[in-house]
Image 1: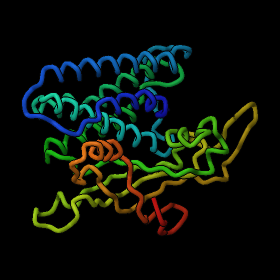
Image 2 (image 1 turned 60 degrees about the horizontal axis):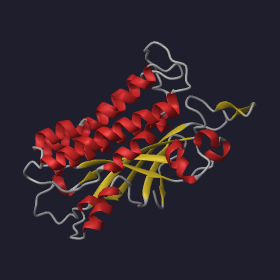
Image 3 (image 1 turned 135 degrees about the vertical axis):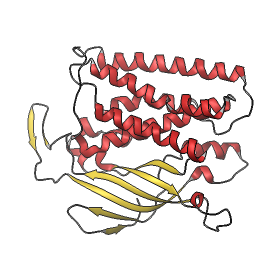
Image 4 (image 1 turned 180 degrees about the vertical axis):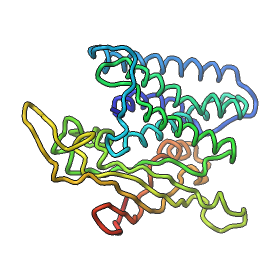
Length: 299
C-alpha cells in the first residue's frame, strides 16, 4: 500500500528543503548533501524493513498487479512523491553548485531511485509484489520534473495535493485512519491530486496576468472502503458496504503558486517552498459520475 512507502519518504522530502542555488561547485556542500542523503536513505530503508517487512513471509521475486485498486489514487500519489523528491534532489545539488544538467538528472531521479528500492522490497514480500503500475507512476513523476527543467528551466506544471475529512474513515478506521493526520495519508476518499498550470509562464513577459495565479485540474475518488471493493472483515466481523458507489471525481479550480510570490524574507521563502505542494483553496467545479457538474465553495 502506498501509505507504507510515503512514511519512509517524508523524512527524505524535508531533509533538503532549499530554494536557492549557486554558480560554482562547493565541494563541502556537495559532500554534505551526498553524506546526508546516504544516511537518510540507509536509515529509511532499515526502518522500513524493520517496520513493514521483517515479520512478513518472503518469497521469490514476483510481480503484483494492483492497477485496479483505489481507482488509481495510489498511483497518482506515487507520481507526486517521485516528482517532489526529485525536486528536492535537484535543489540540493544546485545548492552545492553542481552543473544544471547534472543536478537535473542526478537530483531529478532521486525519487525514482528511492521508490524503486521500496518496490524491490515489495517484490520479495509474500504479501505484496513488485508493481509495474507503481513503477510507471514513479517514472512519470520523475519525468514530469526532469522534462520541464530541461525544456523550460522551471516548473510550469506542478503536481499538488489537497485533503478534506470524509465519513468513510469512521467506517474503517484501521485502514483509512483514526486521527486527522493519519487520514490525510491513508483516506484516499478525501485526497485530491492536481495538475496546477502557471498560465503567466506561457504568456509574453508584458502580460499583466498574475505570475502567481494558476489554473488547476484535479482528480479524486469517492466511496472506497477497500482497495477493490467495499466488503471486508474487521475484528472478526463481516462488513458489506456494496451499496456505496465507488466513483471518480474531476475538478477545475484556481490555485496559487506560492513559489512565485516574490519576497526578500528568507523565512517566508522557505515556508512558501515547503508548502508549495498544497493546493490553495478556491471555489471549484466538480464532476462526479453519479451527478451533474456542481460548484463547491472551497476545494
